[in-house]
Length: 195
Image (cartoon, rainbow, N blue to C red; front, side, top):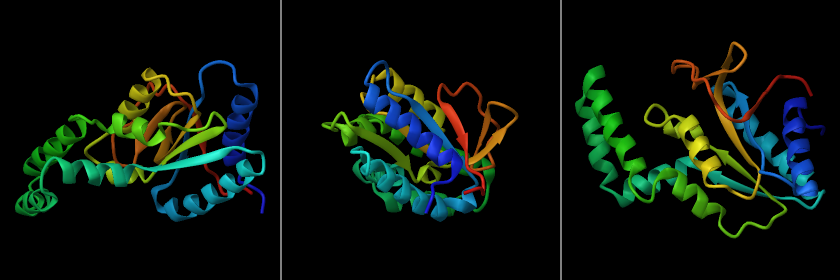
């Protein structure tokens, strides 16, 4: 089955970098509607097979798994759940809970440090895919994550599977709910229904 056009573009960029080996690795966003999460995961499997046939290993990093691990290490998860339930739908109280959870993700090891640790020892012919970003909503914006990873000089291409939408030419609306964020220093590819 052929890869969707935008996903094939992601793969082509990865392949060019891995085969050429020069310069900083590419940072890419694969943007898709949040409702398409499971279809995108299947397509990621197809891309993994396509890259494996070209001798490129894919390292998939679940941001949800790293998120829950951070919460478990820095406090009881059931306490966060209790606090969330006690908000009773009060937006201000919920914002305070979200802020507390965001602070946990900034504690050492931070979320970017956890991603770097997950990618430690990757073969040079590898590509990293960060998925399940929706688990970070609404406590953590992925633009901060990509900027931090870029500053750490990773040696492998990084692709963030981004549930949301493109706003205008360069704006991204995380989960189709957040105000658009601008200034991503990554190439944006938008999933379409074409094959």
